[in-house]
Image 1: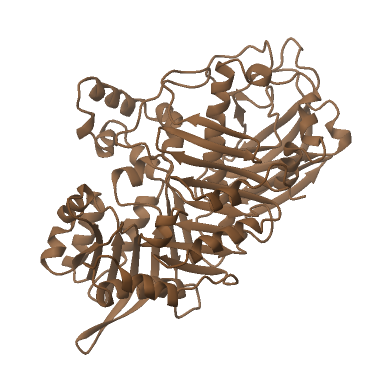
Image 2: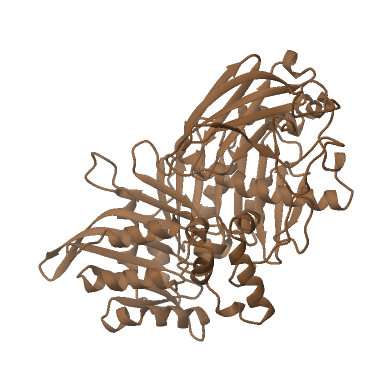
Length: 579
């Protein structure tokens, strides 16, 4: 949902997604003069009271408590966009923006700010698009570690104690929940309940669940699937399997009851069975066979593991049968692929030649399809070529969040050429406990540590959430022309890599033209980007390398770079405001 408002020479545009609301600002030349920044108000949806939003950067010499947030009426935002991530799905929020003028040197900033009243907007965050056929949910993951520390100190104390005494390996998020109630739901932010809800929707023998999963471990999900089987639901589960593979052993342990009844099969490939999806269908007997009518598919990047649900950044995307429609083409595509692997192609085959041949012939990329479900492995890298063409066709911006090493043609498409007019913002997980960031163009990149081992001003010493591994950003999502009326989304299990195209079992969605879904994906990409960009800034400040040393400018000079024609900040300001 997007809303724009203007008043007294100030403009605000709000993009409401699932995980936050992104606010973009602009001012006329007259209102730019003397502007010290923007002061933001937010009306609490429960109390209906207006409250000042806060930042962390003071004016030079301004009294403040180290680590404390500072209300923006006295320490304004010196940027042309800001985001509110204290947001719940399907909730209405109201915001007011004011221009902050005057002089910061006055003795008492609390009593003396000169505020020029600006416009107000009202937006409703959402997990679904206008027709109600999509639900998109993102967990909080590593990017929430600072907030997790503040909100659940007892859980952090427990983790620190277990680490000191060598017991962290046996600790789970359920243990943390016992000392800090609410932390589990806070971390998964609806992703786990959505998965369990799809399984629960299969109520009896008139329903079926077809599950394709790389990592099948989280006990609540395993128990829910087993319970569905006991109430007569027709279950078929394909799980990743390889000889002498640790993940295979985990999967076999979890799927053991279903393996015994013939309801689960190993999917052995020459690479990995990287799918993570569930197809919910109505089921009825047709002779000796079962006839399935797919009504819902759950897909995305989330493995059914502790890390996937609570620690890594992931997405769960559900496509339901649209209101007034008798079929769900997207779910049908997933079901057709599942049938091929379960029945047509030998799950034990090495390599999976039949699957690859079938996908290449029957699942060609569809450039004009507003909602395309794609699969791999395939021959010729047609999926990668299509992704590149979509990204290179960008007219305004490209934002992304990716994991693992990307092929050169994808990287070149994402980060473009130095000085091109496309605004580019993104992050990529690196398997060395750091995050690579790309901001604004190819000439400007940064690297942020995933975790701080010491505190900066406003930052706490951190501890890793229980779990193992360095993969913190696991989402593979690209939004092209996010700020336009014709955005394009690429999202799924596909890592945008050569193995994902030619070897692995993968699935993905390409969505074109939906601003509602783009807002959900785009705001989440910006949440991750803003978090790791802020980490990098803190590192630079600590090294004495960041301009301004972490303080606000005491005049309107901070706006200069945003109004220098064709500069990177100039494009940033205009793109997000929609100009």
